[in-house]
Image (cartoon, rainbow, N blue to C red; front, side, top):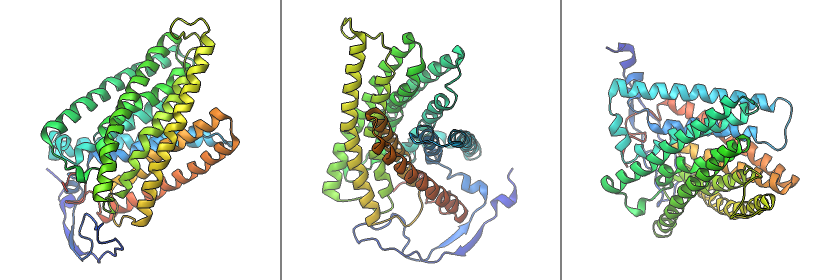
Length: 404
């Protein structure tokens, strides 16, 4: 059934890994001593191709959006962003194909979704979809065809329905079938609520060019679902802060995942400003006749709330950054992509605030942040490829399909 060459196994001795972790933050895997590792062929490794691979495509899609939103532009920037967007589509198709191949060859679809660790990364599939929908508007939104606007509407409502179902059913399953000690709480617990929260981000991007009779329902749904996702995240934050106060920082291998907390307030700030700007000027609040004044008032409220939330993202970013610098991870895990996607939202929120305040200083600061995000994407991507070649991931006991 399989090519024997793909199943070839070769064993070799791995050199010991050095570690400078503190005694309270030992690595998850035993990297303190040499271990004998067998080099596996493609087919057995495919069993460990997990949902967490969609962190690659959600981060690359976010990078394309970041390039499209730059306040300081140069000739060819749009073409670079479009190339990144197309490359992400190819990556997404490849990841989907490999995921399908995994389940066809090895089975276990339901087991992967119900797994206590891997299942939490299933929402990253929908986060990848969100970046592709917003990318459609950013790179092809100049198309005046009514069919294009209608297509975005349909995609938006399908996305809302699917991600709301994910938030309801996945949390319902976790509440009834999985037990997580609060001392082990990690921001990945927020992930099932993340896709529905990005409904507001999608709405903020597509609403402005929609007809008014379509824009208002889209913005209403965007505010509702953005609020739902952020509210769930905010509740989770209380457990997370309690866990940090009681048990200290996570192990060094988990610390990149701390950046997940940067995302919810940043994307909410981004969505509030975008949806306020997308409100039709004919909108009347509580029967008011001065519709333009109503829209301006809502825009000011959204801007004030966005600044409030931006500061919360900044705090989470600084806490996570100091934790990673203090004790960097020693082995690559797909959770490293958390150092890219949430920070992309934080950077987009900064750029949006700069444009709203018409501040050149904030805009340049946003451009500097963008360069940092691009650099981090390159760093994580290189380490991702290196880890695949070295069999540091897609290997028994080293991926998200392994319970801790």
